[in-house]
Image (cartoon, rainbow, N blue to C red; front, side, top):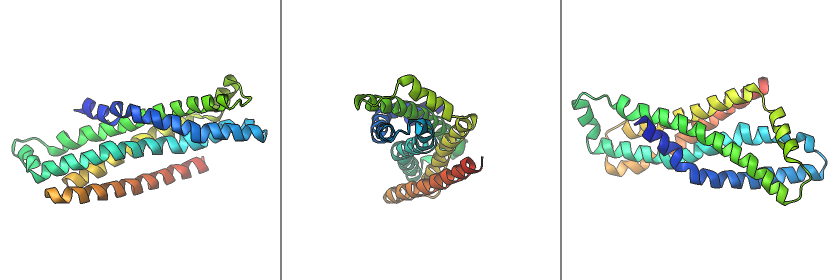
Length: 218
């Protein structure tokens, strides 16, 4: 079940993640490289890319993607199971609903968002340079990736891993809670889904603000 939920939160979302990485490379990286080249500030490219893409946009986009696809499906599935009495049936059979329904989703979303974040960032960085190359920006690939490597630190890798996995755990816990918290009727499932999405966005924003403070004080 854990592997199934990892696939749902990661592997099955690769096509859409690929599109987003290319779009992110065009809208952010390609335009930034072109602008910095025009003003003669190519030496700032690595710091800008790490700050914008690696620290902020990559993890947030991956989390919102999983929330919109897998998170909402989780509320609908668990809410429907609660409304039809399937959760109570598990308890009668001696199966812990938390262990059977929640834990695989928490692990799956945490691993899925982390994997999608890494894939999204790498795709955006590569596609961004390709867009800049198409615009005839005088920046060699070696210089581009050398600046990126120089701007990255061990703290960036550690906080990126922690941040993306926490996003996945928070989204999984909140969506599972809204699906299992009360004996829902079918008519209440949509309202529970909307509430779960809103709370996930708020919690992820607060978590992102906490990591921003850590970056600023480190």
